[in-house]
Length: 168
Image (cartoon, rainbow, N blue to C red; front, side, top):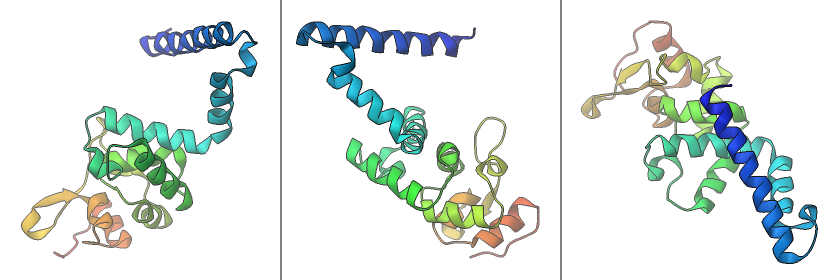
C-alpha cells in the first residue's frame, strides 16, 4: 500500500471512531447517528461529491477561491458544483478543467462538445499546456481563453492541434 492508501485508511478509521463517539454520546446505535445520515447522504450524492472533491482539491492546491467558486463559503462551492453538473460536465474532470484554466462550466461543455477534454489541455504536471495571446493581458491558458470568450471552442481545438489562431 502506498502513502495515499494509508491516508484513506486513516480517514475511514476516523469516521468509524466518530460514529462510535456519536453513538456513545446519544446512547444509541451508530447507524442512527447524525454522522451516519450525513455519510449516507454524501454517498447518495455520488456525482455531486465527485465534483465537490475536484473543487476542494484545486482549492487545497492553492487556487484562489474567488476564481474557483466566487467566494470562500461552502455554499458558494455547492452552487458552483451544481453549475458543473447542470452543464453536463463529467464529474471526475471538473478539477482538471479548473487546473486547465476553465472556471466556467458552460465553456467546458462547449470544449467537450468539440472533442476537447481537460487531459489534452494539461501537461504531465497538471499545468496548462496550451497558451494563447489575449492581447494586453498577455498569454493565458486556452481553456481560460474560451471561458473568457477570447476564442471559441473550435478555435481552441485549432490551438491544441497546432494551428494558428488570430489575435482576439
